[in-house]
Amino acid sequence: MNILSIESSCDETAAAVIKNGTHILSNVVVSQVDIFAAYGGVIPEIAARSHLETILPVIHQALNDANLTKNQINAIAVTHTPGLLGSLLIGTLTARALAILWHKPLYAVHHLKSHIYANWLESHSVPEFPLLALAISGGHTQILYMPAHNQFEIIGTTRDDAVGECFDKVAKILGLPYPGGPSISKLALTGNPQAYPLPHPMIDNLDFSFSGLKTAVLRSVQQACHLPITTPSFELAHHLTDQMKADFAASFEATACDILLEKLQLALKTHPDVKSIVFAGGVSANQTLRQKAQTSPLNEKSLFFPAPQFTGDNAAMVGAAAYFEIESGTQPTDPYKLNIAPRTNITN
Ligand code: KG4
Ligand code: ZN
Image 1 (cartoon, helix red, strand yellow):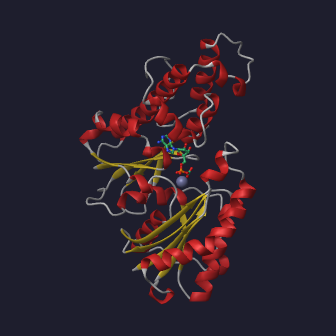
Image 2 (cartoon, protein in one colour; image 1 turned 135 degrees about the vertical axis):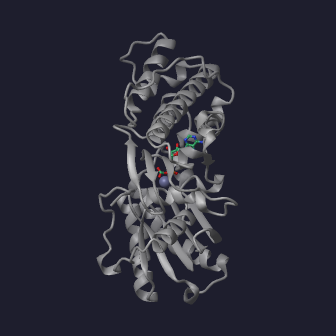
Image 3 (cartoon, helix red, strand yellow; image 1 turned 30 degrees about the vertical axis):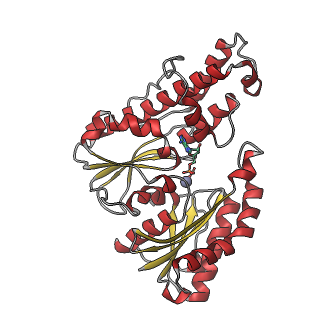
């Protein structure tokens, strides 16, 4: 089965052709990151207009790279939620139009599900069920229990900020370029993770909280620079030396990773039957997280991380998620009734 998949939920315009859920025939991603580096973050109106310009050439390229015509496509899949509304509209309306014109079944896929299924792409071994998934992106921080394909139970979630958002905000405090996650990771390599002790939230169930960690970094930077707590965050970076920035990056990164992994270990206690642990979403690219996980008690289970090209937003993962939805009996969506950007979570 060949699925043409489309992703446009934030600032990547992407299309891919996936064969039987795991084999990539083509994978095209056009990132808007260079546009938004100048602004220090995504501007939704610019993102939507950029998707509009790029989406048809990207789909065209995906079909060309796969060396397939539309007649050899069996289904169309598209990210329909969550994401920026204008961005989602470009992808969903394009997918809907193609499904109607080409008489193909249409599958609307939840973005987080796609991130999880990135672990099935071109992998020599695949996760075994039941499994725990740690979904860590710019918008989500969740632990999910999956007893089988396409079955999700959210067992822990953030009560405030997502961990990726926290990486991005701390990067801003330190004056590092957008996107914050990769900038922090790079700088942390030359920093001391023990230089600035930062607190862990006192939540005893499987939920997370990251807004306190962000504020703790802010206060710690103000204190290290001998500045009052009224000093605005955007004025702090030029008071820091390069070494202090590296030490803050390393201390923050280590703390954020430890918080994530401690919760996963707690989740293993409540769900001892799991066979695999799957990491998903942009933050799963983080090398410190990967190394810490592999040297922690979690390593008794099989750990899965997406290949580097599939940690961020892409359409290949959408095709994988759609395939396993189809295999699990999900019926296609009537393109005329496609619910664009519904406010639902992965379990709906
Ligand atoms: O999954 P993703 O590409 O988009 C969303 O669905 O949100 O995740 C983007 C997030 C951003 O917050 C970015 O800073 C973070 O993933 N990120 C990282 C790394 N690479 C990307 N965070 C930590 N370490 C990284 N290496
Ligand atoms: Zn994403």
